[in-house]
Structures are given as structure tokens and as C-alpha cells.
Image (cartoon, rainbow, N blue to C red):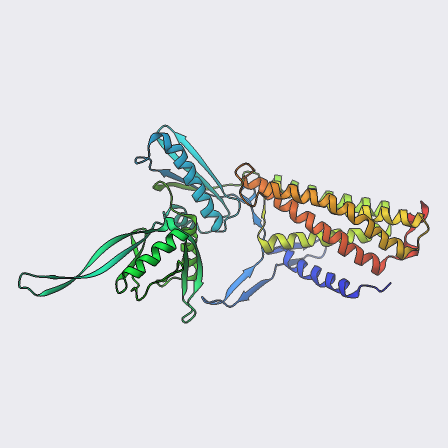
Length: 457
């Protein structure tokens, strides 16, 4: 059997890169008896951008229960809403704001309603917000988009002289007929702009407006502020348009978020904001981490005691699994909450399941008198069906917890979703380390004379 050197080298390179990313952002470790300190620091990368060099650093996002955050209290003005519809209007506002803060990139926010007498409020808790002014601006704006025509007219004064003037004409085109908005860049100047796409109804209205008003000016107004006044030179069909106006990349992206989220159904105002502490103390978090390390150590000890040298290789694969997990958490921005830590601890035990099934299958083949290399290949092959079925059911469960399509009859809690995400990542990485990493290590280092446990049986 040829040793899989390429896969082995790939695993080494992948583990080294993951280990570098998984390092703490900055952590000083004191060495006992040597009076020295080692500083571990996650790497930072500088990349060019249109706004100048940007530094990218990998760090673990922490949830509200671990690091605290910011609380914003909004008051909804229900004076124009019938009393029977106010609760529904408040709930609609909650959904709009929840979409906005999710699109803003704030992980696992909490948005809840509060009704007391004639007071209708929204309480928003944002974990780890570093720029509250931007969050307040995004949450509070209504993003009302309007399109109006400025038509040139000519009137006569008392002396009979022609006097040019402009007439403002409202149209039936507004933000409600917007399908999507996205950050784009002008291909000629590189300027950030917002590309908008109308719905079928909006595209028809936009085409008709531009067709009937060639030569007029179209005013694009957001929240009663004039964004731009392009001249209609020809009919525009297809329902696409560009909004420009000296945007920065961030302001164009924020405008796209606001337009995609839609307008709030009721006017709101900020009546309070405050910093909130972590709902769980540092001691509770440390105990959770210690529990995870104890679980990892116990699993490693079990594998080594039961399977000997094979267990050592499986433990190495499990250590690689842990490093890859932390690196992926940092790369994709998984928010670490205490339920998420629970999902990680649970996935540690599941990650070693594949190794146990494979080693037991190998034992059975060796008992049947098969040569070691043949028994190893059959062990991996025949264990795959059991491994696949067990993990597919867990993956389905994780997707139900995550609820990526936001079904109303399923969970929508951020904490439960955090548990589901960590569980899903753990299962997928467990499959990779169990099937690919362990198999490669066994092929490279495990030989017939090392399978002591199998010979005893």
C-alpha cells in the first residue's frame, strides 16, 4: 500500500495554518521557574482596499452572556395606528429591526417588545457593539425611499416675459416596490454606489415614468433628504437603477442594508441606551472551558487505554479537530455563547465516534484472519455506512435548530441557533478528522506489529 504523502503534507500545512489563526489575539503566558513570559498573538493581515490599507485580525466573537454589550430602548409612536392593530405593528417593527441588526453584522442580537398601558417599546440588546452611534443610526432610521419628477415649465410674468420654473410631481414609485439593493462600484471612477433592482410592478412603473418624461429630472429622496437628481435622457427598462452621491464604502453598504430591511411601520425614537454587563460571570465561563478541556482529556485517555497506539493516532486527530474548530470559529465569525460551548463539548465526544467504529471494524477483520492492510481498508469502508447515517441525522437536527430559512414554526432564538451552529461545525469537522485525518495517520504510521489490542482479542 502506497503511503498517502500528499494528503499527509496537506494535513500538516492545514494544521499549522489553523494553529496560527487559532492563537489568542494577544495572550501572555508566564513560564514558571524561568522568570520569562511568552506572548502568543494571532496574526494580522493588511490588505489593500479602495479606502486604503485595512488590517484583518482573527478573534473569537463573544455573545451577550459572556462579554455583555449595549442596550437600546425605542419608543414607538402609535398615535396614527388603530388600537386593535398596535400590537401587530409593534411586532412588525421588531422584525424589521431584527433584520437590520442581523444585516449590520451583529451576531445573535436580542430584540423584544414591551407593552405597558399606552407605552409601546422595543428593547434591543446588541452583544459586543464597539460603535454605538452607527448602531443607533441604523436602528432608528426609517429608510423611506421616494421618486419624484421635477418638470421644467415656462410661465409668463406681468410684462409677458417667459419665466422658467420647476414643478414637483409625485409618482407611484417608492421603496415598497424595491426588490433588492446592493453595494456596487462605478466601473469608470471606482466610486461606491448603491445598485437597486425593482420588483416587476416597480420595474413597470419605472419604465413608464422614464418613457413619458424624457428630458425631465428625477429626484431620488431618502428620508426627506435629496440624494441625487439624474436627468432622464431615455426610457429605462428592466427595473435597474444606480444611486450615487459621494458615498463611502461603509455609507453605501449601510444604505443598502436600510433599503433591504424596509421601512418601519411606525415612527420610533430612541429614549435610552446603556451598557450592559455579561449575564454570566467570568467564573461561569471559565468553568465551562475547564469542563470542555476535561472532556477532551478524558476522551483522549479513553482512546489510548482501549486502543493503544491506534488510540494515540486518534487522539492526534482529535487535537487537530480542536485546532480546526477554533480557527473556523474565528474565520466565519461564530459567536461564542455558553450554549455554543455546550455544543462544542458535545461535538468532542461525537468526533471520536467515527474512530471507535473504524477500530472495532478493523478488529473484526483481523479476527477473521485478514492481513493488516486489508483489514484496515475494510474497517474504514464498512464503518462508513454507520458513520454516515449517524452524522446525517445529527446534521438534520442542527439545521432544524439553526432554522436558516427563518420558518415561523421553528426556533428563532439566537442562543439556540448558536448551539446549532457549533454542533453543525463540530459534526462536519468530526467527519473530516475521523475519515480523512485518522485514515491518513493510520496508513502512515500504524503497522501490523503495532495493533497489540487487536491481537489480544
